[in-house]
Every structure is written in structure tokens, then in C-alpha cells.
Length: 470
Image (cartoon, rainbow, N blue to C red; front, top):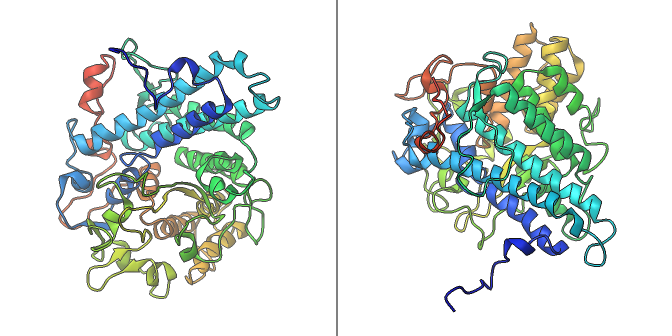
């Protein structure tokens, strides 16, 4: 009577005893990474509002004010501390699952498990490793210097790869940025080899967006290699998904493709083949208070209008490359006077999917990598850039004077295309460029201590081998 057995939870000794219970754990891995304080909303917001395309309207310390105006400290609970905790919780959940799968392999036999479960088990491990890689990559972008600053030699993150169930292994020194990237690539390579090519059945259209498949791993590798400045590797990976000429669609696996309409990509249920990975929400599984994308970017009554689009000097609305007839401006911007982003239309209970990566990003990454390696006259790179731009009625580019000019055009197109999707800061930092000024907030140069987030005080207190960012 004093030690009752929970009726809604399985004891850890039996969670690998049936196929259904193993699948429940796989689904649980996604619940950790898509929490509102991590990739369910706040991470995307932080990586956009750090730059100069949004203006803070509410001065609310809970909703990224310190991120926006670069006043974060080791004690900043709502961002610095909570994002780190959420990221490492997702990493450890993956590690616990992987250790449990290895320890339970003898159970995966008939009659409880089908004869094909050995393959299924490898697929599940691949999902765990992909989510671990995505978590480490995401944390690197805020808490460590860019790979291009020192070619990966700068302090990175504590590389935790074993399951932690108590506090006995808290002390762990930081691996270098390069070492963490090596682990990310290793995890994604394993994922590519072992993830399913596609999901099937009545829920396939949803699962091919919300669960990892082979193309997910490949697409994420293009982002990782772009962040490392390894353009030949970007080309090699992107070529697996992007044909040499239009129409642009993945030749195998999930037929991920550039949708003909950008507005359709963000219309309910946000499950076109352009979305390679997004995290879903329902009324019973919402992002949580003040985490929701629409809460930040849409005005009342849909959201809270925390951030408006910057129409001032340097902001995206004043950039001549963001043309008046562009559908991304006429349909995905809303308001009169004060203008807001309209990519996330759903108010309470906030069921918009949180985007992670789209096919258009793979195309633009390939275009940039080709311009940087083959030069300004590369025909395929120009065609890829124009395919994304003209899809939304943007004027076509014809020629570029230099490779840098061509690459800069792609970076601008990424800024327009992925506005509000958490890409802007990734592009700034991989290029080791200044974070631009906005309003009364000054620019932050790459050598400034504010260029990366501080290590949270919670980690410094628990891990005696941890060092501060300098």
C-alpha cells in the first residue's frame, strides 16, 4: 500500500518487452526534442530575433527580449538555461534509448517480435541518432563559436554519448567544435543507411513529414556541411536529393520536392512533400505557454504580437531584393502600418507544425555551394536559385559579376524564404559575419563575447570540468 505500482507507466525493466512498447519509446524521443523550449518553437524564434528582421514590441523578458537585445547572462533562465537543459534532455533520452536497445537485443525474437524486427530495431536506432545529431547541431549554433572560426578547433560542447541515469558522470570537459561536428556526421551517416526510405499506409503523408526517413538525414547533412563551410560535401549530399534540372524532386525515397506554391507549404495541415521534417502539435499536445510560433509572430487575436517585421534600415522589408509582388510578401506578411509574419496562422491551441528543414533549403544550399566552388557562371546554381525565387514571383537573376555576389544573392534568398523558420542566425554565424544592428540595438561583431551565448550557470555548477565562453 505504501509503494503502489503506477498504472499509467511501465517499469523500466519491461519497456523493451514488446514491439508496441519499443515504438512508444521512439515516439517519446520526438516529444523531448519538440518541446516548446527547444525545437518546438523557441529555438526557431531565437535564431531569427537575434538578427535584424524583427522588432521587439512587448519588452517581455520571458519571450526572448534578452536574445533580441543581446543582454543574456549565465543566469538567464528563460533562454540560456532552459534551452541548454532541453537540448541535453533530448540527447540523454536518445542515449538511454540506444543503451536499452543494445541491452535488450536478446528479447527481439519470436513469438513476441516479428522476424523482421532486427531491421526495425536498426531503423529505430537511426531515428534516435538523427535526433541526437539534430540536438547537438542546434546547441552548437548558439553556445559555441562557428566552425569557420578556427576550423573547428574552438571549445564546443560536452559530448555526452552514454546514458545518464544519475549524477555520477556530470564532470565532462568540452569537446572541440570539430569533434562535435564529427559525431553529428557519424550519427547522420548511420541514420542515412538505416532509416526507412519512406513510410507507408494511411498515415504516410503525416509520418513522412513528422518522422525521420532517409531523405531527412541527407537533408540535414547538407545543412551541417554548409555550416562547416565544406561546400564539396554539401554538393555531394544535395545531389542525392536534387536532380540536375527541373522539375526538382528527390529521385528516390520520399519524393520530396519544391512545391509550386509557398503558401500551400504553410497551409493546414502543413504536410506537402516540400516539408522534409516538421514537428506536429495538437490541442492535447500543444507547444506550451509563450512557446508557440504564432504567439510570437501573429498579432491579436491569433497571437500576442511579440515581434513585428523590421521595416527600418537594414530590415528585411526595406531590402530591395524582397520585391513588392513577391508572394512571400503579399501572402505571408499581414497587417497595416505594423507588419507581421503570417506563416503560422493558427491561434489557440496553436497547432502549427514547427519547421525544421524544407526541400527549398537543400536547393539553395546546393546553389550556394556550387557558386562558391564553380564560380558565378554556374548554370545549375543559377537555375536552383531562380526556381525558389520565381516560385514566389521574384524577378529572375541573369548574371553575377563575381562568385561572392552570386553567393550573397543565395544568402539573401535564404533570408527571405526562411523568414521566421530559424535559419537567419545559422547563416550569419557560419559566415562569421556580424549580427546586424536594429533599432537601438547595436551590431555584435564575431570577436565580441556576446556573439555566442554564455554557458548556463546550471552547467557550470554541476560540471566541474566545464569552461565559460570567452
